[in-house]
Length: 129
Image (cartoon, rainbow, N blue to C red):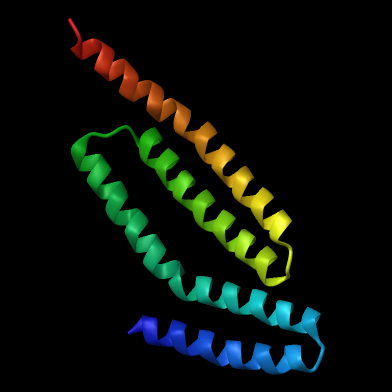
């Protein structure tokens, strides 16, 4: 199971980071953390692709406009990347910057969601007498 690989990698890296931080090499610890995050993402790329493919097939069969699926997938991607960036900033001790990354993530999600919200509201208006 892949979760054992991810957790094993995370635990080993955490132990290494603790040792490196004690040796007063905080920059190296942050770099190790970033590389590990990238490796974990690479372990999951195939699974992410499979999920996108399933959602794409379902939207095609349901007759859902591809624009909406693409927008939802972009929103999900922004949320994950924003969370990863904020956590990296927190790991580096930069809580203020992490908060700004989270704010930017929320604003970008809101901007991308506007067309979907408009479509939903238009559908509701059409249903009203």
